[in-house]
Amino acid sequence: MKSDEIDRALARDAAGVRASPDFAAAVMRAVRREARVPPPIPFPWTRAAPGIAAALLMLVLAFTSLGSTPGAAVPPRAPEALAHAAEITAKIGNSVASWNARSASIWTLVVALSVVPVFAPLVLVRSERDS
Amino acid sequence: MTVDDGVAAVERVLRGDVAAFEQIVARWQDPLVALAYRFCHDRSRAEDMAQEAFVRAFRALHQWRRDAAFSTWLFAVATNVYRAELRRRGAPLVSIDDVADPADTLDLAAEHEDSDRRAALRRALHALPARYRDALVLFYFHDMDVERAAASLGVPSGTVKARLSRGRELLRRKLVTMLGSSDGPLEEVEGEV
Image (cartoon, rainbow over all chains, first blue to last red; front, top):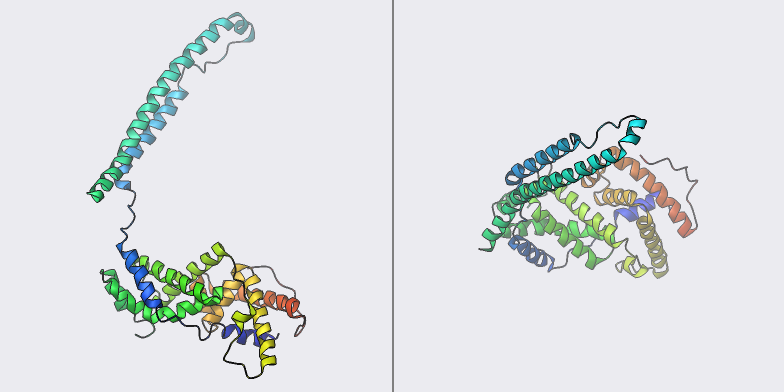
């Protein structure tokens, strides 16, 4: 098959193909259906921004407090470490326990602060639309 | 309605007059169905695809920027719909019966051979990688206008030219395999641009 023959064949491909008589009516039915569908609810970024900012701030605070936890003390030299092994273990245990309690309370606060402003506007918009 | 004077109808639709969209459909239904047919070679499926393209255009009408002709934007929307449809449902199966043109039946033997060749051409076209197939389909649909094909595909003209060049070469190679003949030595295919 020669190049010009390919050109001709591809150029006239679909020549004479036309929409059927009821095509426009079918399209308009679909378009009217589409027009009746309400637009999707956009995410309320402006309302959610304070909540997201607060959540990020709390995250930063949480990581900052993690860095300043007294559990990460510099270990003493080997002979002293051997001598005070029991004491150090006890200190670490106490420190971990206190950190766990603190982190749990911080995370609870973060979740509470972030979830309410993010989801409250969506609930409000939905309830307005339903009513 | 002339080629690109759908602007008034678009304005009315954007103001909430959904019925005005019918003018746009009436003006562009044949080209959009014909373009869809070039992608799928199935009349029923082509109309489904064209309908989806119109609905998508209706939904995105506010995104049309006046820096391009409405027809350019509409063909770009339709092309995206058709390419996505082919990706989703795969390339069409082209049958001899579908290819045969009942208008040219004077010489049945010649017609049969011609149909075979056109069927082979369509099979070869749809066996090409999508980027070459799409460039070829759009180029011939737009009466061999590279600029318009590029606008429909949303790529630079140079890219379309490169894809056309390589697509034609690949097409010839496939046709040689399918039909068992060649009209000349085939050049080595360069890398994709």
